[in-house]
Length: 252
Image (cartoon, rainbow, N blue to C red; front, side, top):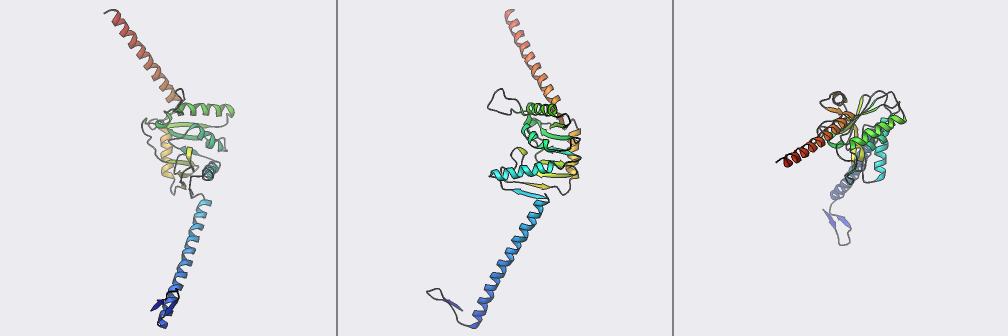
């Protein structure tokens, strides 16, 4: 039996108690060493995944996290050689400038897929005359083309006015796909992740299908043109109704 007196000192009633205490102490030390080794191995594995760009975690909440996250996304996009598709239902004009322009091979078409549910809204809701996100993207793409005609950047939008059919965000870079835990416009500012899809074919096929299907996506230029025509038609219809009502009152 182990006895602890008022001063905190231990005494042992038998030599078996001494042996038992020694064994327990060594077990605690061994467990501590094992836990340390396990933690070290986990950190090394995570570091290896980060270096290979297989999995990265960004804690968010700091400028450092945001800057690092955006830097790594730009780094990945700069490696494009054959195919580049950026799928983000909240993709904005500022994202195009920040990310799409880093693709170095001018012969590669950079394809952007956003959503009508987002692009139809005003870019600045505090300003009544503010342009929509769609209008700003079209203007940005036009300005980019005027500055460098070699650049080939196009944007289509997933249909659906109330809700985008796409929830996740991902990058198609040649034959690899990288999934993002949040949209590019705030990537890394809050806790999020980036990881490489183990099987990219399914997502690449989906992105290609969306891009090539008029039922799934629409060209922004055409969508804006039809929208303007609808607005003009609605205004003319309203004017005709008011004139007709005035004519009926005058002849009643």
